[in-house]
Length: 150
Image (cartoon, rainbow, N blue to C red; front, side, top):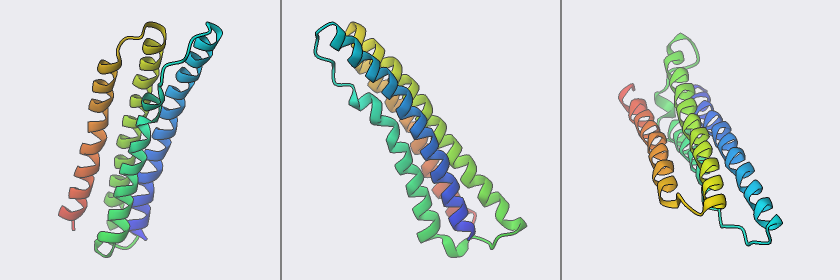
């Protein structure tokens, strides 16, 4: 049961962050499409900037899968000894989710910049990729922590 709670916390918080990031960038992309339509112009393709925060949900899913299917028998039963692992799951999910949220905020600004000035594509991808890297590090260290703590 502890493994399920750890994995669920990681995936849930990562998913919440992804939803916020996607919604933030999506609102900007829709605004740019509306602006370009009112000007009679074709809107730029902004879907990459909108959907990038989704990958953090997958990182939460990987942590969930490792906890539930790989190391589940090594977790202590629910009780005082389980709390450090549960806190690890919560912290992992929150860090991955925060990465997704901030990646969405960068994506929203990128949509505005690209839509209004047709500039900043490369810079936006580099920044969004750097934010993504934080989530990858957190996922890897969480998995390493599960194996080392056992």
